[in-house]
Length: 248
Image (cartoon, rainbow, N blue to C red):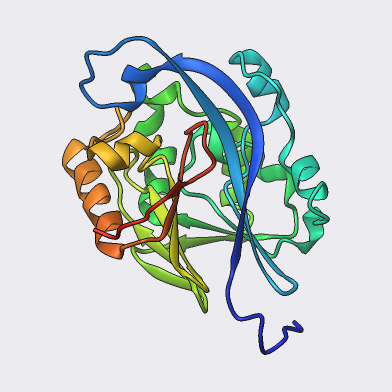
């Protein structure tokens, strides 16, 4: 691919896909606050020259309607508004396999997908054994077909996807939850997925209320802090990102 010598850093564009009124307690571990919390649903487009990587695919329209989302936009439509076609995306990183992050994967028929192997095992085994975890998945037949297609790279722990793009396994929210660390001209940015769903989870150092392992969820917060990011793209905050003015 062509890339100018001055174009060496990645750009991150949040794609606004839907919104919903939820409850804070779902996203703020052991919170005594049970009031409403506006949340957003997004994917994130990484671009460097003519390279395009997508992080998560967002919810499909049918599942969004079933679950009461508002202002839903399909991810390919949101990308098109930025001048990017589905065919330009060579790689899709799935932070995890929940419906709102992975269930539009069938739109990207030519891309290579990157999923933690522990997430694949969870999805294909115990994730569907109880409603406490199965409620967060949809389009299982499509995702199983994708996993069998030969287009999924099963990631074992931390991995370098491209120069300037790293995948870091954190777990917690799901066994195979991963974050994406992106090198930019001003420092590193972190696409946190649901390892950090709301900006205040990071600011207050409180893990997600939806999780399979609270110890790993706390460790994920520590991992992100140790990276000293200049910007964090959290999973569902109404604000597209959290700018860090003073690194910790």
